[in-house]
Each structure stands twice: as C-alpha cells, then as structure tokens.
Length: 242
Image (cartoon, rainbow, N blue to C red; front, side, top):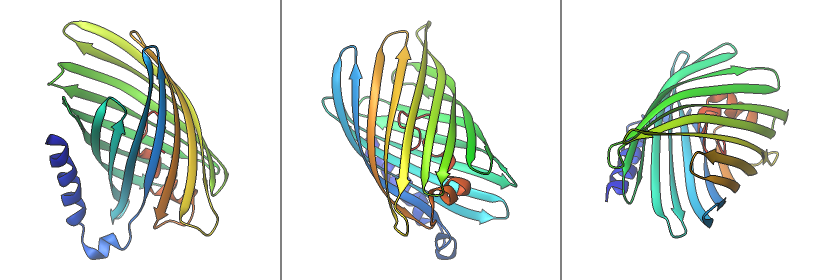
C-alpha cells in the first residue's frame, strides 16, 4: 500500500506545476529491462522511469524523477526523488531528497550534487545519506559519472560509486563500476541505451546488464538534456542514469 502513496505524491507534485512553467519543461520516459547475475542466482527486472526538469526562474531548476521496478521473485518497488539545482556558467550544484519503497520497507535519501560541463564531456558526482528504519539500516556514500559526447546525440558513460551501510553494529562496504552508451535518433524523440555495472560488497557480488528505450521531450539532443539537468538523474544507480 505504501508504494501507491509514494506514486500518488509524485503525481501530485507534477500537478502543482503551472501551465506556463510546464510548457518550458524537458525530460524523458523510459522502459527498462535489467538482468542481474549474483552469487546466489540470476534475476530479471522490468521497469518504467521518468523525469521532468522544470525551470524555476533565473539560474534555478527543479527536477522530479520516479521509477517503478518489478523483479522476478523479488516483488516490486517504487522510487521518487526531487532535486533543486543551480546552473551557472559551466557548473551546476544542488541537493536532493528521495524515497524508495518496496513490499517490506521504506528508505529515505538526502544528499548534495555538483557537475562540471566541458565542451564534449560532463563530470558529475553526489554525496548521500540514506536510512531505512524498517530494516534498521543507515548508509552513506559517494557516486560519480564521467559522460563523453561523441556527438550531440551519442553519449558514453563511465560511472562509479563507493558506500558503507551500518545495521545493528555491523558495517559493510560496497562499490560499483559501470559503463554505458545511449543514442538518440536524429530528428526523433526516441533513444536507446545499454549499460553494464559490476557491484561488489562485503557480502555479495553482482553483474548488472541493462537495456532501455526512451521517449524524450522538451530538448532536441541528449547533450542539451544533460546540460539542462538530466546529468543528475539516476546518478549512482546500477544503470548510471539510463
């Protein structure tokens, strides 16, 4: 039941955007297929995600993003995150709050983020803290991504993360390293992407493979979307923003 409350809250946030502001928004909606290979077996997951980037006046923009994931044998989960960012020249900075809910627990996340934009590349990172009272887990970490634009509509990603979780006096470290590519068809709102990440922790290891098909709106190229704020969405996820 809680996951539907989270989804309703996300939709309510979108409904509060005025018509004039909404006309200036950009973003995307994607369908995702993910395969996870672990020490304990394999699993497939299917999901949908979306983001809306809303200019707030001056150098400020708000980003609302959400996702729904259904995993084989693992139930389903929904996530929602809100960002407030300031873009000035070739840099952007801001903060975010988020919530993730599945069949057994609800986790809350807060953090800060920063990006530097170069002619054909972007470097972005965030620091974050999360807590899940239902599972008695606290976690903190840092995520980063380096994005290379071979053209305005062809982007290559390299991403990494490092974190630590604490539960009942026991600590566990985790890290990930991944790479991906996304291509948007010229003069079209559609793009396709693929990614691979290697996840490792004190308790388990996993290989994550992902494919995505996206509908983009409001921007004409992947590079424009990145500079508008899309560089921050999904940063640190297994698919590094796809």
